[in-house]
Length: 208
Image: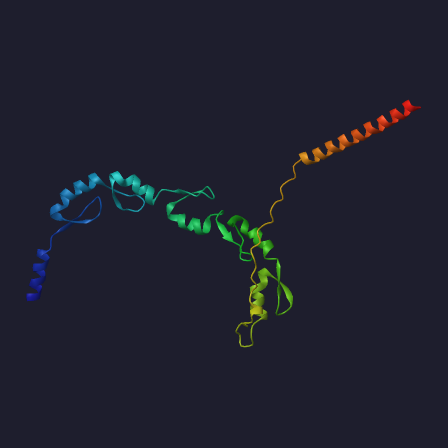
């Protein structure tokens, strides 16, 4: 009986609470009317995250937390919630490294590059064969494993390091005026020779 009486006294001593219809918070019943008026006048519920935000700061809250972002690489508009995933895995213009030569290219071009790059060969010092780069790991596992199932540790059996090989530089086009200049000099030389020959023949004719 004493314990039941104590519980009753504690329940009676606890202040009554009410739920604000605007922010859904539990508010002491004695303050609910004042709180409800203040809450409805000054706070607004964000439609995106449900957070109660001061009305005057709602635009700032939206811009910082929910506004779509423009990707400078692919020019697409991305929801802010998906931005990190787009930047790291989805953007077709993000730079990624080729697994064979480590040269960096836009992701959209990588499959075509690796189809060609993976068909290049490296000489295996152990089995004295040329192995395609795309088959190198499988070749290591299949051909260079000890009888107990562990991989051999010889330095000749590690995948060879491959230097990054950027595309060859484009040779600048030779200026067009160079050939024109040579033709002009050739024409002047021929004309000069012709004048000299004519002058010699003319003098010979006069002497006769």
